[in-house]
Length: 192
Image (cartoon, rainbow, N blue to C red):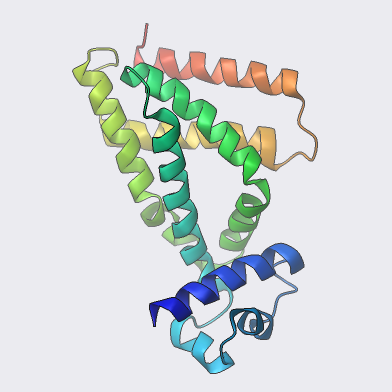
């Protein structure tokens, strides 16, 4: 059963990327997934209902990418810098998927699920902040979870502005924005 659900999710993502969300029919998804149309409805009431599942996969991929990209960081402050760089690369490399994801969730009632879907990412960042507080390199008087949500929102907003909303990336501008972001985050967290 899980295999069919995974096939639906993978097929939906592929068809959404090639045809667009609005131009995709459930019949397109099931044809690519190699299942009957009725089987689709056992798992999802609508094509839009697949979006939260795609989002969950993307969050798992983001976390795996961040962990791999930051595993050699010697301190929490360095890990944070490495994480910012990795998020920028991920947004650039996964631009089409992320645009699809944001558009699909924003057009549906499933946007409300975003915070729950992002919970593992918030937890990962909160642990990083706690580590920084224990190392005494980050302000100890900030709530780690609230700060994690704010940081992720700020970092992602910068990445979206640089890579998702423009067709052409101005590398000099992107470099300056990322430098400014790191300075802003360091000052906010009290990193020297």
